[in-house]
Image (tube, rainbow over all chains, first blue to last red; front, side, top):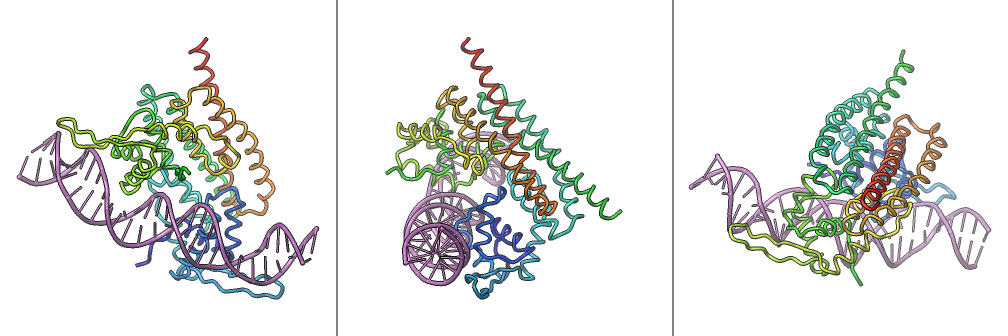
Length: 187
Length: 187
DNA sequence: TAGATCATGTAATTTGTTACATGATTCG
DNA sequence: CGAATCATGTAACAAATTACATGATCTA
């Protein structure tokens, strides 16, 4: 009966995977890095951390080194590590590509550290398959409806299609980057 | 003392701009069109419509034509039209490009019908300026931090950069499309 | 020592999600 | 007639936003 774990929760688990961090550290990451459109407001982060701790996925303990401000460092528990790995291992469906691409990229960003390179390559392969199948569907939709659409509407649609094409190219580049790396690492 | 109007509210105003529609119509639009990642759940749409009506931005009246199911058609009030135009006319800032690109595209999609082509061209020009300035910032960020990043992290960042480059190209294509159209229409 | 920043939290309000409830009408 | 779909809503709950509150420590 594990309760639902939101995208923010998973982002926090992913960030806590490699190294422990405080609520303030996590807020700064959301506020200053170009990726991740999570809110850095205390009213979002601290309750989320409290939820995760109540659910047994992380544990925080106050650090009181001399000359430092008191801060609560959180780290993953065994259950938290399992939940992170479960989320990262989820099979990817068409629906994810259509409307949850940001979540897929987030999973990708955490994946190498938590699951290793072979899992990343499998993930990228599945993503390439889905994108390759989806892009023509969008083109078909556009060419069917274009005549009946105002200029701005089909340009907005073209915007979406362009995004998916770029994502597909990126996906292929990423696969090459990982395969090259693998070969060099384990000849 | 106009109360806050959310993105969903604005999306509804934009859709009601050209033609009146029922809650069910709007739900279907969110459920079936490729763009717009709004929820089509009744628990989101109907309360939003009720809010907008309470705020005086739309007005609904029940349609009871013979042989048709009863449905409540909403249309913009004068205040609603003003609010839509105000939202569409907002100046665009760096911050919008960084983390609210979806809202900008939504505004673009509604803009021609509500404000006319010259406004669209001004909007696209401002967007091009912001994107042209922002892309190099991202490249600089990547080349500064790349050495210290794991492969997956810089690939995720590259994903983001690629998205913005595509958006910039799209923006320039859209400007050409609108300028070409304008010339042909009014020689 | 005053102001900035570090650091954690809470409260009120709004909003969205999920699930349920209800009834009319069309179609096979 | 029964099932699917049209059509509108509500209730319980979870979550985010905004604003406030508090206090320690660093720096000018």
